Image (cartoon, rainbow, N blue to C red; front, side, top):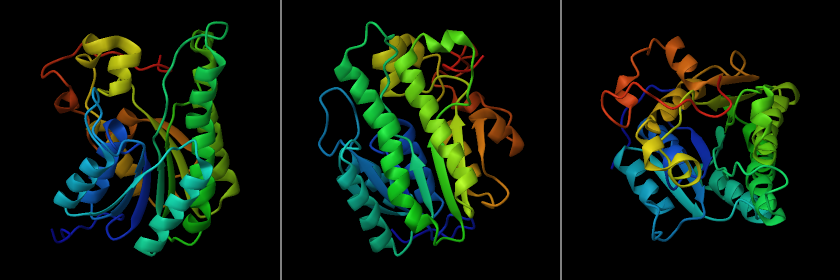
Length: 278
């Protein structure tokens, strides 16, 4: 399909999105494609999963149907060399890289004292190390862009002790936030921001690792995060950096206050607050 005429600032620009085979990553990638962007997709799922819908190739097809260009890449975020090769490949194929979206994450709220070292290694390698590897690989390319954005799906730093019960996971997610906001101070010309939803989002992680189908039905669709991400990525990097914001606040600034259409269950008002949100 020929790219649609689009005046979004990301039109004609290139983005790299991790965890893009399903959920929030997929929604952001498809939204970028619809905005006219060229999108590189990095995810582990290249073949259909027995329980989880979606592959990186399915997302690529949806991007192309929406009018964008897609480069699907199958890889493991824990493999730093594979991440660097993927980012460099995207920049070479698209001739540029203007946005890096750190979305991929592993969820496990098991407290310290109960979590195995194997699980701890998984969440820290995907969340913190994966974000570090992707960001490090992307920055040399982003520095050459006149519209450079680094966007991480990670929460504002809430120091209420109740969130420390899931210490290993909380440390990994807060680490993603600190790393991104740190880049806002050390990378002039690159906007570095974090986004986090006020309610749970209907993803496989929420269904299988957090609250089951009942929680999914009290959640919002991934598209709410994608719309907020697109709003952030549209901003002048010099005027929008160093912030960790809630998705709903970003949309409110854009004049979007009726969020009822994002509910998984039409008419649902008893929505589940997300973790790290009071």
